[in-house]
Amino acid sequence: MEAGPSERDPFLRLRRHLRQEAAAGALLQPPQDGGGAAEESTALEKKEKPLPRLNIHSAFWILASIAVTYYFEFFKTVKETIQADSWSFVIGSCLLAASLSLAFYCILYLEWYCGIEDYDAKYPVLIPVTTATFIAAAICFNIALWPVWSFLTPVLLFTQFMGVVMLISLLG
Image (cartoon, rainbow, N blue to C red; front, top):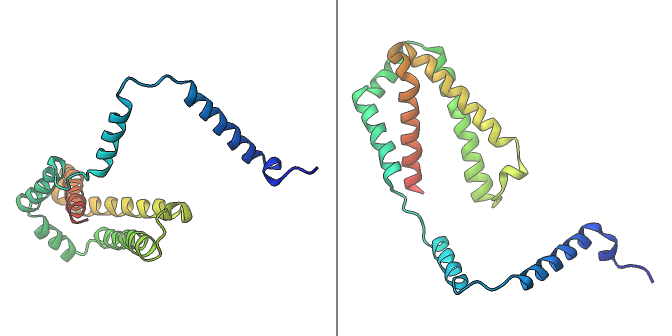
């Protein structure tokens, strides 16, 4: 008599063995004193209850970004830097556009249109390339704006970045 396909496959035998051990272990454990069902129901309630979109953390970064924009005249400074023919600002803008294009490709096209929820497993190089492109853009922006704000430049740009991220998280 020949063994069936499940007897020849070592993974199926291992899975069956682990299931039997788990079932035997569950039978050997003593029942918990009245808290098991209550803990499971509260865990389900926590999973079902969505987190609020606006919290203290998000509000802080959004307000900090608004304050940086207002008190440091952020847009006026960026406009003057563009008019000064800053090559590092132009390169940073191109890298930021490439990074955002890759991010929109992942989110809008792959996840929403194609229905690929685990696109980082199917296309593992997309997220590292997008991240590297964004970091290169941030370095270029820091170089371009360093003559204006000097050592405050990384802090101000990070504050603006976090404000935009938290504002986007409120939308969806």
